[in-house]
Image (cartoon, rainbow, N blue to C red; front, side, top):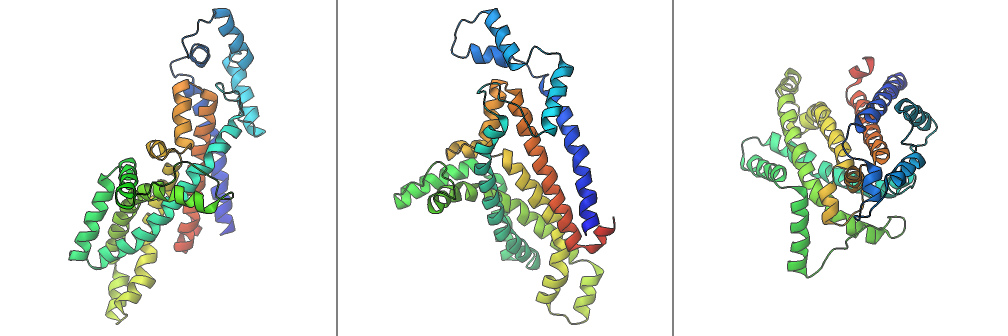
Length: 317
């Protein structure tokens, strides 16, 4: 298992290096000039000399190859640069917003897994019965309802039926766990419902496919109880594609909660991504893209390790 993990870790380096190089050059194809947008944001009249001086201060007057060298040297030393808009360290800007998106994503993932795996299993076991039909309707509803709209319904429902408005905003879980959970459980539920719908459908399809295999029929022919066949033989093999979906959805949520963050007034990575793109702050965009890429790579590594745990044959590949 250790050799398997080391091989997967070695693949992380060229992947992130390729992302870093690609994002550096592609981001400069974007139209607009961050210096002009910044200095003339409020309609101020700024001379060309002032604009050029600001470009020089930010290092944007250097040749592209020099900027690329500074960028790569900074990555090696752990320096992501400074935001062209605020002047703050990119690492600091991300560190302030990242815990919000990470916690919502983790809570949504836990909600989805605890709901989807049992429901998907029930749907497959009781195929084409009223139980299966009800679960499939719930799954289709989860796919059809946008998470941000469900979030607004949750807020309006709590206000209309209980005359209670959930806390809006973010407080660190280490400062006040009760306030933190009471604020983030609602966006996690609104996102987790769709997440659970995707996983439920995948769990049902995977389990139905596994239950058609010869070894399942053999176990049944030997008189093994249905519950034992499903629990010991079927579910473990059916989880392989489900784990992939769970991992990819989790990685997507880190930077994909833009509208949900707006609804619940959360200052997360998604909102930061939009702000950086609007302002043309390509230094911050580079850092955010690298963060999302690193998360996807890390999640894929974890999924590979879980694959090897669920199916020992994979460790030999």
